[in-house]
Image 1 (cartoon, rainbow, N blue to C red):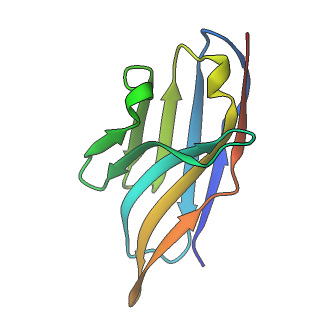
Image 2: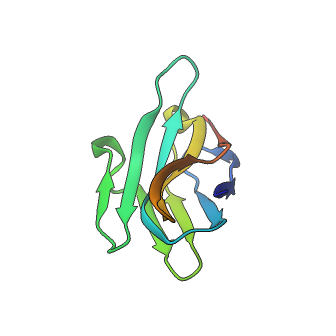
Image 3: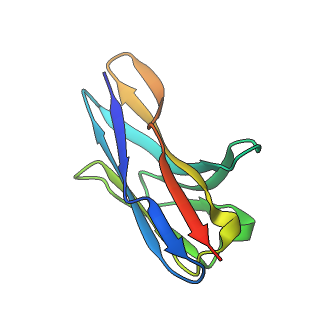
Length: 119
């Protein structure tokens, strides 16, 4: 069984910073792609950023320049540095990974971590 565990969420003031982390565990042959998504109250889950095993990144246009995604392939960890936070960044942030396990690929989600930005 593959699990993703997020950490680092919490409360920040507008203009502040937070760093989220996600650790993958389980029987994993490879982690093909990892990413962060978020869901604000009353809204659909949306892409924040993704990164492939080769380091290719994709960001939501509205977050470019404020958010930075990174990963440590050796440790199977993912991070998201969030700077200049805005109240509209308030959401539950979810870690996602597409992983290879023996004979198949899995799309795995973490349980989510709350980020709240006060004005």
